[in-house]
Image (cartoon, rainbow, N blue to C red; front, side, top):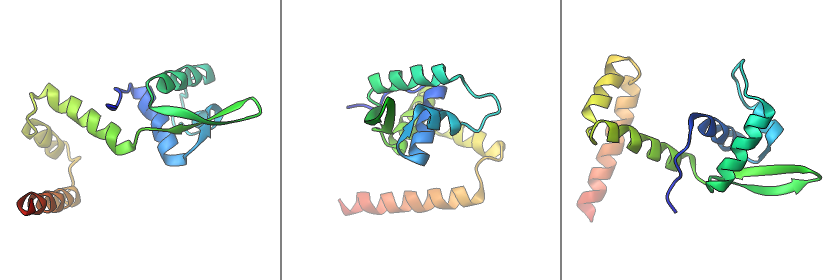
Length: 128
């Protein structure tokens, strides 16, 4: 099943679930760091939309409280988002990389890690 497309609020809710594990709606709301938190009912509606998208599921029910857990993995959602961003650039990575470098968001440590990953994947391709 393909990873569903997630809105900004949906991603924030998923971040709470990925960081904390199983949560009820109140716990999800408490996981928001913003001073301007969404309303409880907004989180509730969005959680049920995420459930319909098969991004999360009800893990259990304690009394009248529903506890939810993520179904999709963080890296799957991140890959989907990166693919969507790259599609804006016609699939070209160079404009995105240039922006990250110019904005100072790509650190030398990030670059070293990317080089290690690239070399590892290159060796894997040669072995096949």
